[in-house]
Image 1 (cartoon, rainbow, N blue to C red):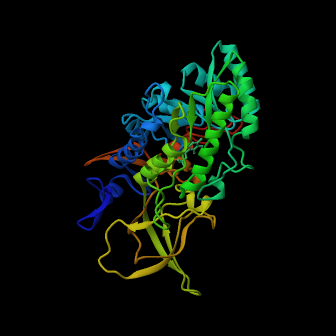
Image 2: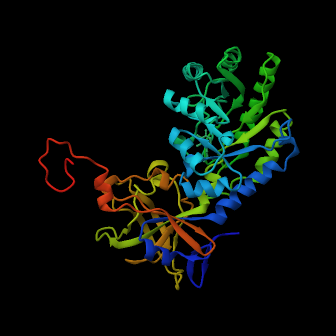
Image 3: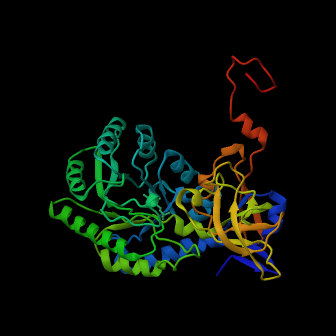
Length: 439
Ligand SMILES: *Cc1c(COP(=O)(O)O)cnc(C)c1O
């Protein structure tokens, strides 16, 4: 079921007309559908929860730790927390947000290659489920931090399985030269070291090989290596109780073949690493959030170059609002908010107002004919969209709106220009020029 549908010629998010929200809240704005977030979480979770082979020896279902970085709006997090989601986090800020949104500490995983001592201490004092250790120096610092707090750190070691995958080189993480995790040989050595460290409780191993993965083959290859390493650790007399298989399953962006379904993924997982006598963790991010959100923008004007006839659709959203096309050459489907009456198409470069050529959403795309003032939506913008927003070019952050049925709420307002200025402080060597200088 699609919660972004045209009704009476107008795009709706669930029961709310996008045009009305654009008028009330202004553009550009992010819109999220609660029903879509919930459905994606449930479809993915149920696929895994229903597999007998993926129950832990104690009968626990897999932990589905939503990758908070995909969309960390508190209202989005709480929507998912109420469905039973845990949180995969990569900073103290994300742990704090997950807790604030009602995620229980025992469902929080802390990943990332550069956790600071302060962040480790916070995670330990919070009593989170596990810390995913990504290197030897990190393990050594963690031991020190845990020891100084008189706590024992539950960890898994992130192995870089040497199988990279993903929709773009910048989001491939499992390649042998990527910065994430340690080699299997090093992991096995570290695990043994951790087992004899009174400050560390090694619980298992983890991997996460990339994002926007559209083919199960590399995942299957990585997972079957993980199984071998679980067995190797056990053969060394070490106990392995957990296996964290990361996130990374791709979503349809409408310009490529459909990625594998959660059901196919779960089937592959159960066959490849099922019945290992561990508690499983999964960390989906994009899969949950991407197609639950859109970025709505208004056409400022159409600029047709006199020399080439090239048409630029200049819109009021820009790379500071949605950086994926500029950073990853990402494709976003673009749809008019009001269904066009005629089928005539124009060929456009869709660009934002930011002063960089990179601020181009797409080139030479055939779209319904558009004119100044028309509203359009960048589809599949719910993951790695608003979270990567900035105020570059002194453009206020785009607001975020969450829809539930026919209700809606601004869940992050657009800052006013005054709010933006007040973030900055003038040093007191400037003579007061206005009311707020050198307070
Ligand atoms: C980013 C990330 C994820 C989520 O990846 P998606 O492609 O959004 O599913 C999961 N685990 C880790 C460790 C990550 O860094």
